[in-house]
Length: 271
Image (cartoon, rainbow, N blue to C red; front, side, top):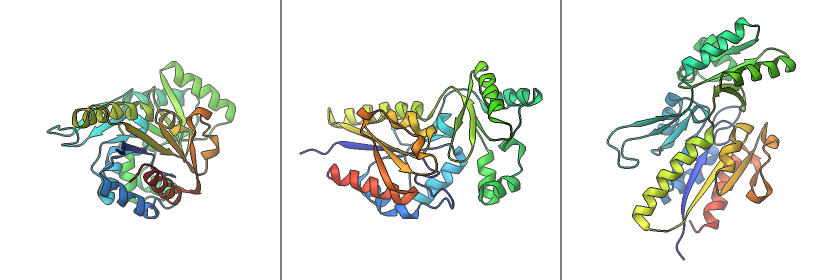
């Protein structure tokens, strides 16, 4: 029996990376099996382009990736036969997001964003190294925030952003101000690219898309694939998928749960 092609999309913080120390090593066995089988692993995160590039080097990952909750898809040289790196943008620029946020601050909104913090201050807030915090500040189309107002003020703030065609998404650690796009836009774009590639190579062999995430900002990505996997974490109970999706939920948190679920899926599909 022919095995289907598998394609994996994965969130990072709290999913492939531990929520507290950002380590991925507990997922090493599953990562090694994916590499050996040639199964693409598309990292899809709120992290920035420089952050994900650095992590891909650690992981030995050479596949396309999605930055800042879907702000852009980055296609490396050779991924689909392209001669140069390609960046496909979605939604508002960061400059536009910061412009709207500053306007809201002048009107009384109380928050603290990455643009307000030095690399040192961000490192202290997140536990990142100063170098990693510097990479986190190099943003493309989103601004993470720590909300400092009341819940009622937050509702007013969200409404004001919506009037400017922006939205606020809760991640594992921060609120993210961004345009009207999400992780699913980049995932669907790449899913179509992989379908075209495999169709040219193998005709009609099936492609099974899998996604792993742990928080509400993974919801749309999880709903857009064949096999959604909710990794146990701080906000994972808030992820409620349609019953028809038959979501898999990990028993363990972070990379340990990621590792077990991916290994189980690989066995199920004959890898």
